[in-house]
Image (cartoon, rainbow, N blue to C red):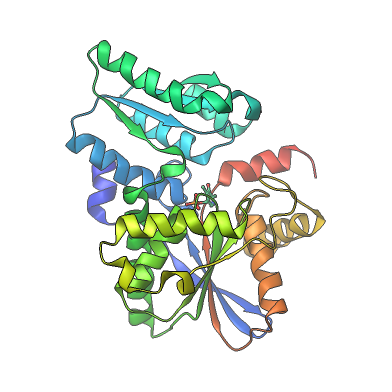
Length: 313
Ligand SMILES: *Cc1c(COP(=O)(O)O)cnc(C)c1O
């Protein structure tokens, strides 16, 4: 079944939402990627699964918190392919979320440990599985690494294809940047195409300097000849909207989430897409951007929209 999604080379829709400060605002609905509520973790996850299959692995090990979209998607890949799955999760960040409920219902085993013991717990788990005769496959948290980067090079190619088909060219791309893999892939896509777009990651938690360091190393890992490009200049990761950090929200984000579902019928969340949509609006105002074509990539996280609703705000 997953094969057929990959073979079909599914492309997520792009369409115009309206105007934003005299700019044309478009959206790419990666939240509609056709597996397990979609989003960037589904796009990455399916490529990891392809790699897993080529290596004949028969056990998945991954890492993430209880609210992780990545862990929900990986659990769903495991359940649909009948591969057992262990999720290593930091005990400090354990909340009852819809994603956690799904991981459990889909049959993943969640192994909690202190955040400081994650690395050794992963190694221990993998070694134990090998001793039992399994071929474990480890997927880094958030779908980080070259395979995750590849997923967003592919996404960039879809954007290019749309531009040529519709004769509409984007000046800016905005999205929520977390581990930075999505951004690394988009920037690699841009470099490979010799393109001019401004790719602006709205950081949802990391400070710019640290976040950029990680993204640069992802780009260097992916592109052999990356050093010939001036990557530093290509990278805009704005930490002006992180508030008090991961998952922390404010009234303005609430307002954005409500108005986007009301006006466009699109669910956003406080941790990623709502924060990024708000950040994008502020960034455009602050930098007095006008008369441009702007693309917002909806990176998914639909279950988090329901966590948000349940909180009763
Ligand atoms: C993980 C995630 C992101 C961040 O993606 P990275 O590749 O880690 O930067 C953005 N939006 C949603 C909904 C996510 O789940």
